Structures are given as structure tokens and as C-alpha cells.
Length: 396
Ligand code: PMP
Ligand code: GLU
Image (spheres, rainbow, N blue to C red):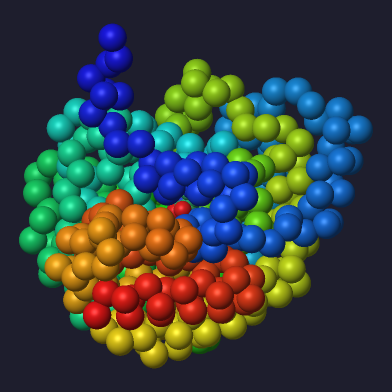
């Protein structure tokens, strides 16, 4: 019999959808994939070379549980250089993707019944991770009209004696929102006043547009730093999703607890990938900037195309590589045997009838929207938008 813990878990909707689309594509179905949450670029060549070097230099064995010292030192260098923050390697852990760092962090601080606040829309796995740690997710809906800006008053209203942490993500998946420094400072001060942690998932930090910069929460004040666990990784910034390297920084005792948990569950992350990640963090600024600029072109194009469609209004998000248009004005409409009653019906209709893959907003606590990832070539985005335009016109 399967445990209650797993029976009560919803599988990752993004991964289920990716599996389904990969299966259809392998059967020759011509699908335009707007579902993928990973850069479509190849990992930069200098990083690949370092991985090859790693195998020959013998970086093929276990590493310490919190990761290779040289990579942890490189993470410290990065935080100093980019945010003026001082961390020591004992305040850094390397994990099998940011996903594992997030799980480690929640396992390290959450007791059964503790509450973890999550502003929504939010990434699919947060709620399940909190439940696995036996915490209670407290979802706080942000307003689409405010472009999903962080609403501190609303968050404050949900803080209770049981609040252990807030889990935030800026730049955000799925909204693309980038929280302002002012709102993050207010949140940080609230965390200090009410004594809870901030888990700040900054994995899309490099993918910001229109002159935006990532605000590193831990850099806002020493008191805020003392209660912030920053989550990051190489997946999105360096097109390295399959390498599975993420990292976290935070107070020494929490990092130690995360490392103890990781040591017993996975030992350490992949050694050659850790070695190559040093190169990613130290020497890849030019490649990151090239990818960012390309994402920016696609972002502007897709937003323009969406806004030219009847009944779709889509503000240009300033970060990540997603747009989350509201499609609720199509609810109740029909075409052929399809009736669109919710975002999942729309997702299904677009895939079956028009061969466009998106993810239902329901998976992200955004039931009136669909998530479109613009991590695809301009040519495919153009074809996909033509198809979407036609699909929506059929519903009018
Ligand atoms: N956080 C967010 C917001 C994400 O979108 C993702 C994407 N998978 C992750 C964490 C996990 O990233 P990683 O590949 O490093 O596990
Ligand atoms: N984060 C990506 C997404 O949102 C990748 C898949 C996943 O890990 O959920 O699609």
C-alpha cells in the first residue's frame, strides 16, 4: 500500500505535461511547445569543457554532503560581487537542483502543523513540498490587476503564531512578476518583527528586462539576512536544467541541518556537474547576457501578439520567461465537441485541436489563466501565436 503522504501528493503538473508532449512529439505530432519551463539554449561551451575536464581529473567520486568546497567558495564570491553580501562556505549548500535545496530548507525548519505562507500564483511544487514537510501551506492570492505585485497588507493579515516561513519567488514563475525592493523590504521587516523565515527562490535572477535588477532579499539588512534562506541554481541562468545543480545560502545552523538531511538522503550532488558549475558562476556573463537579450525579444513579440488577439490582455512581465494571460472570457464558449469551462479545458483544446502545448493556470493557483513559456525559437513562437489566434477566434 502506498503511504498517505504520497497518496495525498499531486504529481508535478509541469513535468506530467512535459512527459505527455515529449511522447506526442516522438510519435511525429507537430506540436509547438509553450509548456517547457527550461531554457531552449544549449549549455555554454566553456561549461561543457569543464565537465569533460572533471571526468579526467577524477572528480568522479562522492563530494562532502554540502557540496565541493571550491563551488561553495565560488557561491560566496558571487554573493559578495553581485550583492555585497558576506557568506562563508559553512553558510552554503549545493544540492541536486534548486528543487532539492527547497526541500532541504523546508525539512530543516518546518515542524508538523507549522504554517508556510505562499503568495499565489505560485510554482507547482511549493505546496507539495510544504505538505511533505508536514507543514500547512497558507495561500495568499495576489491581484492580477496589480500585475501580481507583492501585497504586504494581505500577507500581514495571514501571519499567525504558527507562521514559520514565507516562500517567495521573484522573478516569478508563472507570472513573470519582479517584486519591488520596497515591498521586499517591508516583507523583510515584517519577518523580523513577527519572527518568521523568508525562503527566497531567486532562480530566475538573471532573467530580468526593462532595466530591472533582481533584489536579493538577504542583502536588505543584516537582520533580514539572519532569517533568509536564499535558493538559487544554475538551471535557468546558464541553461543547465539537466545538470541538476542548485544551491542555498542562509544561517549556519539551518545550512547544517539541510546538509545533514541531504547527507542521509542523497549523499551529495553530482560531482562533475559541481565542478562545471564553478565555471558557470565564474565565467559565463557573456553567454547569460546573450540568452537574456534573446528572451527579451521573444517576450516583447509574444506580448504584442497576445494583446492583438480579441479578449486577451497581457501586461509585459519584467522577469523569467513566462506570460500568464487570463483566458476567462472564453469560459462557456464551444467549438466542435469542445466546451471551455476552465483553464484545463482550454489547455486540452489548444493541444488536441491546434497542437499548441501550454500549462493550465490551475496548476499554479491561477485558475483563469494559461501559462505560456516563451522559451522557444522566434519562428516557433510566430507559428504558435498564429495557431492560438485561430484557436481563440473559433471560440468567439
Ligand atoms: N524554483 C522555480 C520557481 C522553478 O521554476 C524551478 C524550475 N524547475 C525550480 C525552482 C527548480 O529548479 P532546478 O532545476 O534547479 O531544480
Ligand atoms: N520549473 C519548470 C516549470 O515550471 C520546470 C519543470 C518543473 O521542475 O516544474 O515548468
